[in-house]
Amino acid sequence: MGTSLNFTVTGYVGGEPQVKTVGEQQVASFSVAVNRKTNGGKKQTLWVRVNCWNRLADVASQFVRKGALVQISAEWLRPSSWIANDGTPQISLDVDANRLVLLDRAEVGAAAQEEIPF
Image 1 (cartoon, rainbow, N blue to C red):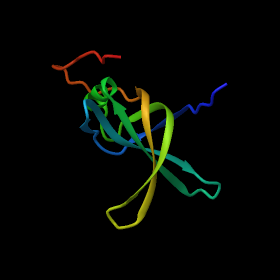
Image 2 (image 1 turned 30 degrees about the vertical axis):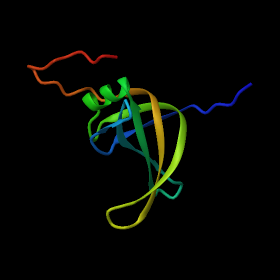
Image 3 (image 1 turned 60 degrees about the horizontal axis):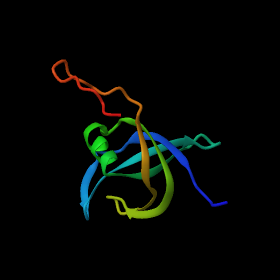
């Protein structure tokens, strides 16, 4: 029997997806904030960096927006560190999404109604 890790992250998108080409593949990356309150009532935020590849990158670049509520599923995670604009060290988790669910209704203008392709 093999080993596996499967998890789901639900949270709010922190910024617009950034799309890059890596070799012959497209990747759309964005951060998701997951919040909780501790027993003392203090708010904690964990940032998860989500990478969507190829066809999922197309969906993310078209429909994911800052502030949107999303849910992603992934099978692996990597710890990551970075320096914030104020110079303080920060940590996050990086994941490669294999499923993306948009939990907010898309804002669609009267002239531009289109079907979401999933």
